[in-house]
Image (tube, rainbow, N blue to C red; front, side):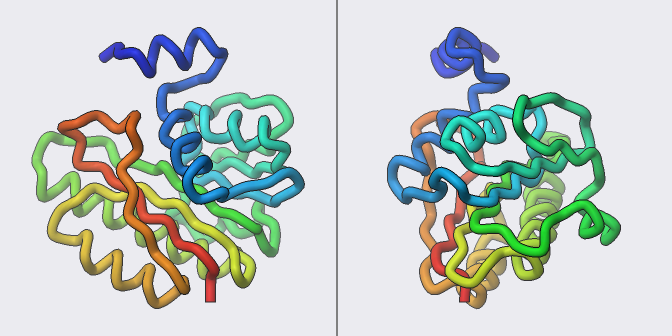
Length: 182
């Protein structure tokens, strides 16, 4: 589905429209700065990685699908596997996750699978995000949302809910932003 964000992304050289979601969050929460070590989980097709590199961050990007972004370390791996830690740094300033499941159209299945990816991303954050670090995570709103929000609150001093302007109106996606990891 092409829309104004898709057209704008390709015109500006970005790999996907989702870049404007991250730009919106960056503008509001100042997530990343030049020199930060950033881990991008569920990174393909790579627009979030592109933007983080553009800011001047040192980016490790992980996804099951191959993709290319100049000046980023691309790790092709399944985040559900514990072997991913062999490819990651010991600590990061920021972790961003736009990971999404293959949707089926069955709301309960899709929200559960989103919850599982978000929960795994949070497990990774617990191991590799520095104290006072920041985390952005997409999750589909549904029956598992409040459980995930509570878990985020046990890891961060502040948790914010955010729906970027570039999110489609009928989309169930929302983003939780964890600020100041405990």
